[in-house]
Length: 114
Ligand SMILES: [Mg+2]
Image (tube, rainbow, N blue to C red; front, top):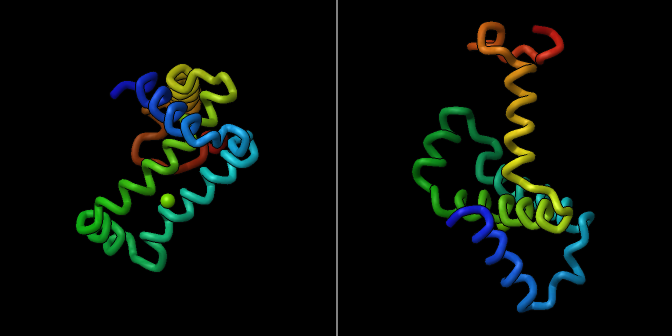
């Protein structure tokens, strides 16, 4: 499925349940953070190595949480009239300019310190 098809499916799911009345930007932004916290819960208290091993062995519930974040994110962008593909590409353009490969490769220093 491409993004417009996914947006259509999300709208249909929401509208069949008459949930648009609850899906204002505040509630959707909060829902993104809540679902991101549910995703983080899978890795809480694990070392880097344990979290990598855990994500190999329990992909399905982690995929569910990633999907929850994405669904709310896609709906928020859609409701705000933001072209998500264009916004992602524009932000990647900015990130490429802020983190030129020759300065940032293998280096986690923030862009204003490079
Ligand atoms: Mg969830």
